[in-house]
Image (cartoon, rainbow, N blue to C red; front, side, top):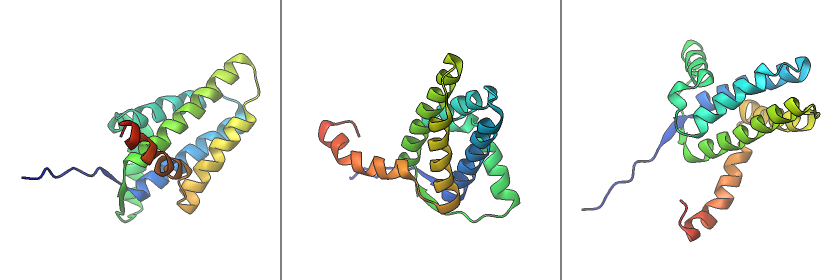
Length: 144
């Protein structure tokens, strides 16, 4: 008997809405410099990146928005999105640390905002492309 591998999926519209919320938070941070905003992003990306997404405030808010606006369900493969969330986590940690050290965060925050805008407004997930590029390497060394 062959084992059927469960393919984890997530609604693309939920992901794009989360990315839009990230974009709003990053833009808010760029205009205010309020340290609380990247800390929120660290926590939220961390929850989504390390398999505790059910506790993510942005995911819950996104679910509510998707439901209220009657967005359709469009299942997409989840692991590349989790990888992209891990990249977002790294960017958010970097922004937080730089701010605490008194170092300008404009470039790091600007890059995060750019990629959140790509995902939310155009449906282009740069982290997913990196994931697809790295997947054969991970399989070769047994990390998949």
